[in-house]
Length: 323
Ligand SMILES: Cc1cc2nc3c(=O)[nH]c(=O)nc-3n(C[C@H](O)[C@H](O)[C@H](O)COP(=O)(O)O)c2cc1C
Figure 1 (cartoon, helix red, strand yellow):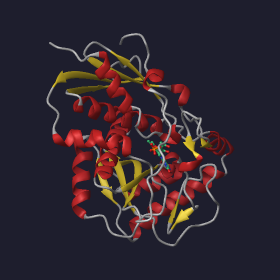
Figure 2 (cartoon, protein in one colour; figure 1 turned 135 degrees about the vertical axis):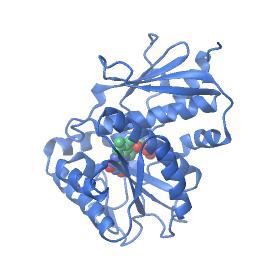
Figure 3 (spheres, protein in one colour; figure 1 turned 90 degrees about the vertical axis):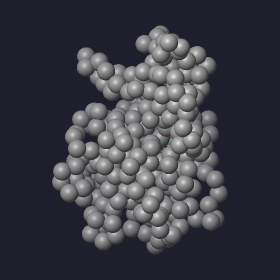
Figure 4 (cartoon, helix red, strand yellow; figure 1 turned 30 degrees about the vertical axis):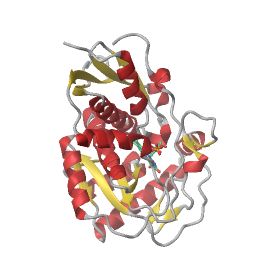
């Protein structure tokens, strides 16, 4: 059977590293096999105070795994994914076994969206997102084994925004979490990782929604509207594979939203703190494990394209030895 050339694998990896990650830590390493691509967690890039259970790290790697699958598929190599293929080595998160296949138009559109997606922390316009979009995004999440819950206005919404505000208050008073946030954000143009100063929000909140206070975020509230709509991703089980799949589903939804011209941003503060995590479990009805909130909405007409956030290049995250 034919195998992909090294140039093809490097091109796919160059797209995969555009994946979103918590505080832009990019906590991944990669290896190439002859007909396979392997993803490893990079524990040196874990945020112990912000993300004690490693869920954000696993979701970030899940997003990169989905980006890699899309990129490889667009280059003519469909993948069968084996998650946590080696129980003795839990940092080996996935092996993607490759088979030649013509790319579909859907996969090409998703791959095209990869370099254009941004975590948009600005005010959103007030036009509603059509329900048909949510049906499509639910289908994409379901294909990854993840439930997408659209947060309705009223009690549901109040519970989610209150959980975000409470988690923010608790994290601000946790010196280790505050130190991690300060260390990983407000960075200048030379940095290869972290959240750049140019990408933080222009206000502490929009409407009812408090935003993560990266270094450089003003302390003053923004306009009383423009928070956008909220989606929550949940899974039936609570283990490393579930967190990985939640990241894959997040990537699918964020890329589809980008293709649709929507602005979006992952939000995870209330999932990082025990007490607010319990509140988020209630929002999902008690039976599902919450992983991530996705803020979504139309960009305002005044919105200019957001600057690209930095990434470590593919050759820096690729281990030279074969898998
Ligand atoms: C697991 C995870 C958690 C995140 N949590 C937040 C968050 O709470 N607030 C926020 O504004 N961005 C959050 N982000 C977005 C990252 O900060 C963003 O992906 C990273 O800075 C790279 O920027 P980009 O998405 O524009 O490429 C999160 C992303 C991931 C994958």
